[in-house]
Image (cartoon, rainbow, N blue to C red):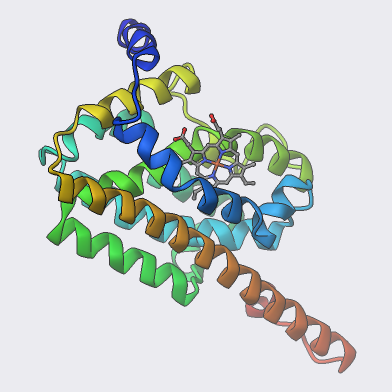
Length: 249
Ligand code: HEM
């Protein structure tokens, strides 16, 4: 709590040269596009369905596995160490819990991800090897998003799918973060403390735009996958074909 208080003052002192301000600025337009993907619109309209949410969880599982494995591996890197908060932010175990809730104990065999998710994970592993300071851009995009709009989306998802006691929604809960706003301030001040050359800074900013783009492509691919599944279902039903479990996943 004491650290959170200190950063409140730090937040008031931020300038245009701060990475946290620059990253927000360069990704502003991408954020609007991400918000307006069909999948995110379904969330915002309170129309997210169970198949949509289950499929999203599968992709989030792969993404956070790659992201957190690379953050852990590079936790001592000067571009990663200041923004490394596994106790507060790590999502992999929460997603595993949700997947088990929805798919059952053999959930690992039921994970389905589109090509865009694989490309995103490949990029995370590549920069983890080649430019670990770029991980900051990806951690920012996912974790600060989860602590911002993600909090509202969690409540909407609960209502839309009629889930009780937040079952299947561990992904949205951050028990180690008492105040998302104060934590975001702390996170921004840590981002601003990372020493980067001009070239590295530009690289991080470009990577943040790319990180949003990966997310947009994942959402679009998921939506396509869902419409294919729905069409299959429709044609199975109209032709009185048996509907197998795979069709409904
Ligand atoms: C911040 C809403 C989707 C990443 C925010 C904020 C809101 C918001 C209200 C706080 C803005 C502020 O404090 O100034 C939403 C809604 C979404 C959505 C309603 C979709 C339904 C996304 C997605 C991503 C994302 C898909 C990335 C994958 C971020 C990030 C921030 C943020 C990184 C922090 C910005 C900063 O303070 O630097 N979002 N968001 N958001 N969102 Fe989203």
